[in-house]
Length: 209
Image (cartoon, rainbow, N blue to C red):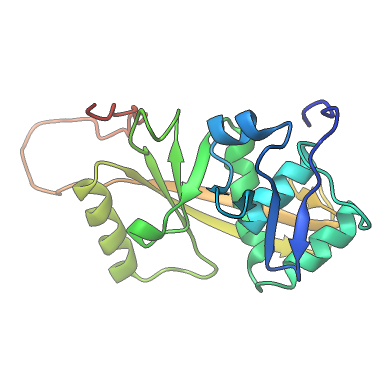
């Protein structure tokens, strides 16, 4: 469900479809800061967004695009990267479910997910977006990394389709399906007896202050 339209939503400046920003003193600056959208550039007095962040903010009416329809903005952003649409669908899925979504470049994954402000807690999940069946080597690397940094891996596959169905996600007339699998490191050592290995929900780990 979309958020209600904000009065005087800031205008999104799009530069050749590769970058997007709003004025740093916009009416939504506090919201952007608290919800961790974009990066503040104090020298240029702009807040810069990734294209995933930018289109998501357009979709929930937190910013507006001038001289361009929402569909035209989607088409322009999609030209920037052949998997932009898939990455956006994953990004929007987790934002819609209440997560603060940040870059996963530090860990070699697509996104990291925070239950609350990254200033307060560590991320709980690492989102790895893959287009094809990943090799066992990649799976092993991801689960070992997750154990080292105390996170759970979300292996996500987003597939685009020309056909509409109740299970598909519609973004400006392009349809997507999303599947995810949770993965966590488990040292498979024989211990004897009977034990449940059901995966428990992750919990937020507070940062030391």
